[in-house]
Length: 335
Image (tube, rainbow, N blue to C red; front, side, top):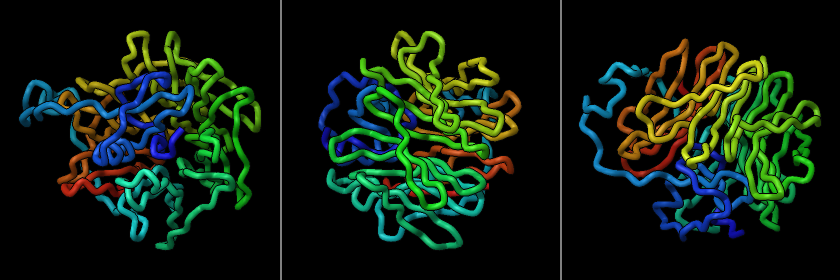
């Protein structure tokens, strides 16, 4: 597997299976896929591809869920978090004192790899993951335990946890690939693994005891986040290879799709049951969303070409990425 095919973390998607060929990406495609970050060509994990954009619908058109009253618009104040000198940055989580994510110095260069960073009290630090060629941080809990994923020199994906500076690999026994996406305050880790047959499954890791997670009847499942109660959010691929979001509460799975979206991916869930993530509209435009008390809200950075939310905290603070008018991608924290 070429390192240029591995571009961050699994987020929004219209999906190809891992066995399907991936066309050689253009520079724009590489940036678009990194913007919503996907793992291209990792066995057993959903292959992420941005849907083709058509002409954008006019505001208030039949395809606008806000205009139709199916969702509302939510306004946030934002602060960017861009690694100094990097052309692309993404913030995937915060514990309110430290932001975690990844940056890419040159997204148009296949040799420019994803690198994890932390931001605390205005100070950026790179996290060096042993044995990695590409790596990224995806989550941090209240006590500062961080999880993420990396690709080794053989092209194999692994999850990892950084606990007070000690980095330990997270690998599902017998899996071809493993990635860690979320960690709650009790240390429960969630993520995705690829089995020997090339199929993707979610997992929950309770202190080294792994439980596979599969949406009922799904071809593939990714678990992206969890809260203190052990509720899960993620994405699954149905029998027709369509992509849907889901929430699992007390072991009960429910599909969660933004109204009129072509695909939806929840990424975070807080202890109050609020869910955030992103969705593609009918024109292929990426928007952030929040689902709270049974209602959806669109969350877009003003003037941005695209927005996605990656985590939501108990006090409503969110993290995410947006692409500006110059097609440059920035990480942010909002409230």
